[in-house]
Length: 541
Image: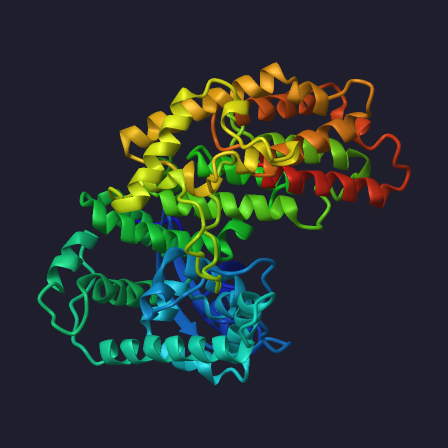
């Protein structure tokens, strides 16, 4: 079929995205235009697509010109500061974990966006690491910032931790340099094929070498969408779990960068953006059209069937961080700020009142060693069988637990009321109530949970916190603080308190009544955000 019309579409690469700048009927005119825009410092590349338009409306296109160049920024590239303690890396292998790469994505966000790189490509590419090192003080600033966060509030000098981080970075670079010298196969149609192809290479693990190969293939892609499309096709075709999990972490890298910002740019408000991110995490994000529609459809399917748990975690983390920042939720109409904020907050909730995302792992900061005289926790039941005096103490405590029917039989009479729930059993709540596959330990947990539930009911604890004569703000804050104080482990007792908070949130005009006696608009907005922080701590948001 002969085309009835031809045109030449000029696209430029800016901020990691290809966008159409002009369409010409003549290829020569298109080339002159492309050369002109390549003279702009902020242009990272240009390409010309020759389109053949047929009578039936179909279009065939091919690239007739393509050129990449280093885009120059007007301002020096700086690190992006973190708002919480980053994950603690002890070995070079720790640097490659998902949590570590999420931190790299945030601290080096500006640099990675400019270079169009994922943390995976950076860590597995020697040339990329060399370029990062060529940016004066950028790496040292990033490591210094992380070291400061990890040592603040401790007796450890920041310089010592920074030296350790430099040593880990050196090992990562050395590993990548040695891999650069190897002759590795190309990326296979299935990632498991690539893993099998490098399994006989003695230099490093198959997983690392396969990621080196994948990183090189990603480096040839010209946009975040093209990188994501490659990864989604690999994931959709993959049948082996280990290979799929590795692909998942790289998809998470792309989603942790600028792609999600581009995807949600069209939202009319921050509340819409948050809702859209939760839709994507659930695998039901709707896109009107455009080049990304097929990729997003594939991504939706992978997320909805649970194939990409790490990617889902990154999407939800981004939504929660958006909700917690200082940007107005509804910029175009300040009068709708509270309504929109509450609408977005509802999306963070789930039926059982728990957070939609796994809690961040506790950073491995230096802590004093446990004292020999500390009581033996019942959490020992989830570990290997104890011996000697420890076993006797655990058995004694179990006798106490199973003979108890009310909380008064579980705590020492000398403990004051405020300590009953936290010290009754000499138990570290987070450790003891962590999910365990040990059936016996689960039986103990359920029994204690029943005792705590009866205590809340018989002593009217929830009613005392939720006094109807007090303002709705005082009631909501008291209940949220109680849920997040750590005095109750996960279970029926804590859910009882959480349900009361949810009931308050669903009362008519809750957001307006919450700040009705605060006449300053900024103070009212701050009060709502502080309350959201309490909900997050209580795992209600």
